[in-house]
Image (tube, one colour):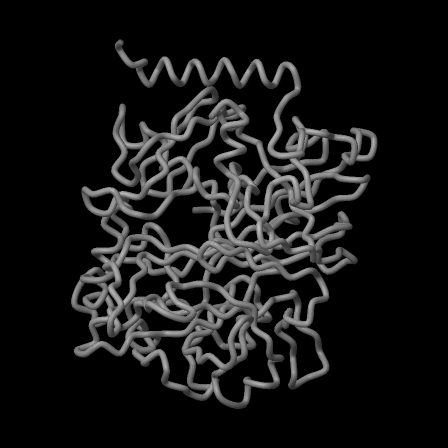
Length: 471
């Protein structure tokens, strides 16, 4: 018997998907595409792009980053910098680990790569929708590193460095108004990734600590949450760039040692402070600087991960906000020509695009037309398949993670759709205090956004596919 071709499998999946949509069966566990909680067009309204950007900047986090950069001869200086996908300006993501590990020293020492742009970047999206006659926003921030790694400890075998590391911060805001951020909206929750666990905190939780002005009575614009990030390598404890909530107020460490209690652990050092360059008050408060070829050596920590320094001695660096929508088209199977992709590989994920998408993040414009399209979901590390999954297989991208628990139900949702995602499929979590040792989709508090939720006439905007920032 001759096995079916990939084209036949795709078309079969596509047909099944259309049949399921037609009879209204799009379920995972107990969830359906119910729209009873969503507003009709008479009460719908949308934010402007300027307002969406304002919300993303207003809630941009302050990242206190632990470094592990004291390897002899400065080989690991700057390894814990946040960066961006195209820092080396060559339009090729598959060599990011190699260039970061081997070539970055030349940039820092001003011995080469003067054209590099190591601009720390958080890749973002604003997901806007109407629910119960109220406007809600889900803000996504994705912290990118060119590599992650671990070190061999006694009796512990650890794999070598891997290409790409990124960690997610998710914020849900409810009761959003059309007057912009800080005008009465309520924080529903924060979710941070720590490897496979999605640690959640409801708004008002005592673990949520923000930047505040301690020296003058004037308030700082924005609500910038403190988040601690682990070092790039390690085999035990917080490691590989995982994120944790900071459990201390600013006054407990600003004029003292750079060491904070974090969720799940006691005191942990930090050596970097990363702050949004367009959150002007926060940038001025920390006197944060952009990384350039001229100042790179001064902004590299070079500290051992257990070295405790004073907060005033930390390196303060700005990051910029860019779009998840810029990166997603690079996963397309034709991103670099017919059946050619130099960044990603693996079994494709099928997505029915209602609207075309495009990106020029690599320097060459990638235009993906509407219709059924295939996207790769595994990283390329040189010419080999890496361990890292790309955006098409990220559970949080579709909302299919277990809030406050380990794991995901992405595969279940994908199979329930005939193994074809609709472009605007998204499960909007509402947060929960009811944690279960064995989570399941039917226990997740939230619902799939209904068909058409993303349209302006329905009060929606799906920023996973639409860029807000200039590349």
